[in-house]
Image (cartoon, rainbow, N blue to C red; front, side, top):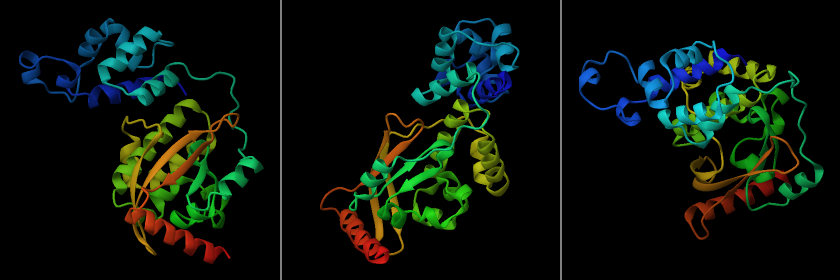
Length: 281
């Protein structure tokens, strides 16, 4: 990770921020605006820094901006919590970190607990959105990761390169865009991870959608939410998910899917659980 990465992110934020969104008054120079988004001098004025200072940030010629400057820029660009965290990672990249993070493993006790959740899909995602472990129902709802080569057991790769993933999500563009934002957040934390570079390179070549979204600025942190799914065996399922960071297991997140009790989605998930149990047996 270099200061050029910080400058690139700032440029994306600047061009993607509408003047009225940032509080730039209409009329005057805005009426004859020829550039997309904000001008550098407008960002500098709104953030309370000199134009020369901000220009050097965008050009990668300044290191370690202060927390006050980062907070001001986050406010100008309207960054959410994930976006602010990503900006901080880019501005203060980690030092003395191994180029290849150690391999991740889900603890046996955690595997047993997840496997016991027979009524709820549950799985653990690690660095780069690698799928580290999934219970039977999660594999039935999404895909059986254990049948894939180890390097292909990655949620982002599945979303973009497996046609079944597009069919599984009626709102696939929104789901896929969020996944890219999650991968970007990770990239800021582990800037020198060669396996991440390999994954991004493959997806950039094979997926025009990924290439477009990766060139954007959106950052997404998974916490909780709702997704609509369509399973070929049982039909539509609207799931609610909770993303739980596992204490003591760095960069591992447990996802648990639930449905509203008594709903058609709940009925369909129960049917899928029966189907998965019979197939596994």
